Length: 150
Length: 122
Image (cartoon, chains in turn brown, cyan):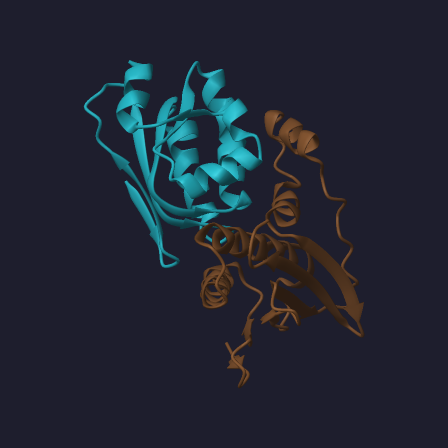
C-alpha cells in the first residue's frame, strides 16, 4: 500500500488493492487527511463515507479480481477552501456513472426495500461536488468537500 | 453465538431475560467487507431459528455504509411476515444521520434505548 506525501504537506496518496477488505484502510486514510486539513468531525464522517461508497462501487462493478490498485489522492484546492479526494483506477471500460437518484426516489426505494442506488445517492449527497472523467485507460472520480460548511 | 471479523466488526446475541425477544449487539464498522458476516448472522436467526422479535443495539456501532443497511432491508419484510419486527436501538448520532438521509426512520422502528425497545415488544 504505497503512501506518499509532498513536501508542502497538502497532498497525500494511498494505493490499495481492489478488495472490500481494504475499505477500512481507505476510510482511515481519508479520515486522517480530512482531520489534518481541518474538516469538522461531521464533515470527516461524510467524506469518508462518500469515498467508501464510491470505492465500493468501483470494486463491485469495475475492478474486482483485477491486479490494478485503486489510488486515492487527497489535496487542498488552490484557494484553500476545499479538500479534493480523487479515486483513480485503471480499467478497460469507461466508468458510466449511474444517474443520481432524487431524494423522493431513494425514499421510495427504501420503502419498497430495494437496495440499489443507495450508495450512489450517498456519494452525491455527502459531498459538495462529484465529477467523473477518463484519461487513457484510467477512470477518475473526484469528490470535493468544502472545508467550511456554509 | 458471535461473529467477529478482522476488519473491526462484531455481532453477537445478548441475553435479555425476556422470552421471545432477541437482542443483537453490533460493534465496530459495518461496510461491504463486513456486511456478509452480519447477513449470515441475521439469516440464521430469522430463517433457521425463526425468531422474529429482534432488537439491534447500535450503541457500539461506529460506522455503517449502504452495504450494511442493505442487510436490514433484505430481512425486515421476512421478519414482519412472521408478525415480528426489527427495532433499531441506541443509534449514535452519526449513524442516525446516515439512516435519516435515506428515509429509514419511515420504514424502520428507531428507538432511543434497548430498554424501550424491549418494553415495546413486551
